[in-house]
Image (cartoon, rainbow, N blue to C red; front, side):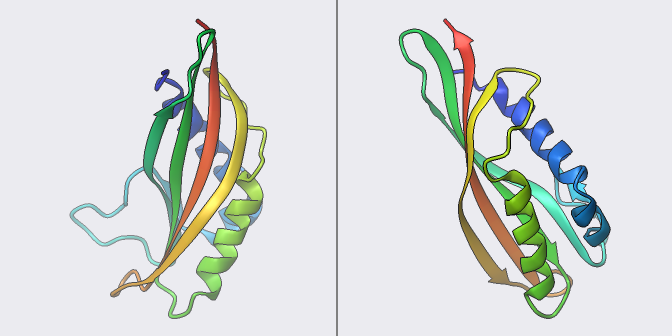
Length: 140
C-alpha cells in the first residue's frame, strides 16, 4: 500500500475547491482543521476537509490505495438550503474530476454518500460528503 498519496490527494481536493469561483463567493473559507480553536468559528458557511479511511489496493505489480474521505460543510444559517447549495457545488466540482496529483495518479473519484445534521449554535447545519478516490502509485 502507498499511503503517501493521501497528502497529494488532499492538496488536489483543496486546490479544486479553492479554485471554484462559486464556492469562493459562498464560503468564509476552506480549512484542513476546524477554525476557531480556542475562539469562535467563522460566521456564515465554511468547509473543512474531514476524516479518511485508506484501504490497500496494491497488486503484484502496482502500488495503490483506495481513500474514502469527507468534505464537511458547516453553516450557521437556520435552514439547510445554503448548506445544500454548497454541498451540490462541492459534488459537482469533485465527482469524476481529473485532479492532478503531485504523487501518483487518480484512477477514479466518485461521490458515495452524504449525511446531514442539525446542530447547536453557532453551527446550526452540517453536511458530511463522502467521496471515494482510487489512486495508483505506479509499478513495484
